[in-house]
Image (tube, rainbow over all chains, first blue to last red; front, side, top):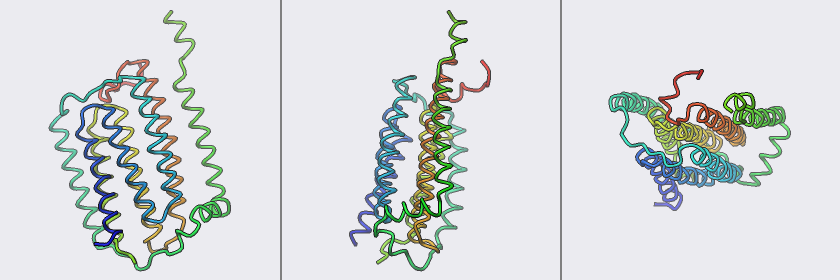
Length: 171
Length: 104
């Protein structure tokens, strides 16, 4: 067994383990923290796929920012919420059956897939390649993305802001 | 050189996508539903990065697409959380099956 295969197996097992734990734990905060394991394992997979910049962005944004913002969401609402029952059993079975069907459909279609060669120059100055492409070929989507982020920022502030008139009515 | 076939990455992404889909459809807490959607977006990112190395036209484009996906996912998480807090202020619940009316 080569080292590359071993690293892939360990990272894939960690990623799936985090997902399974998310489905089975009862406390909400534990579910969230088990998904951090999945996000970190996916960052390791990006390094194996010679995408170092995307791996760093994954660690910073997903296991840093998104997880922290979700923890804020839990702490500001019901911070010791638990999923007590297993939920609606018939609905779980129906959803599970549909997902198993979807899984096998996709599995049979990706099983035979194989492409010939692989890119060899992706790991050479990965960040520089991404920067050159972003500022030459993809400059308009890049600028549009800044507009999306600005709109999301303003929208989040307006949505979460306490309404002044409504506040006056309650008093 | 290529010890791991591209099928392995696609299969892992499929498993993660199925876990995220199951979580998003069956969990009760809204925060967990939101983070399950993030997990599904992550599975898509694995596919994009795998195709950028092993695909039919290998190149840097897949990694750039995955960066755009990460940005949109972060914006979606922020707006989703703001909606959740506004709903919690009005309805004082975080259970997704109790959020079934648009007006209060």
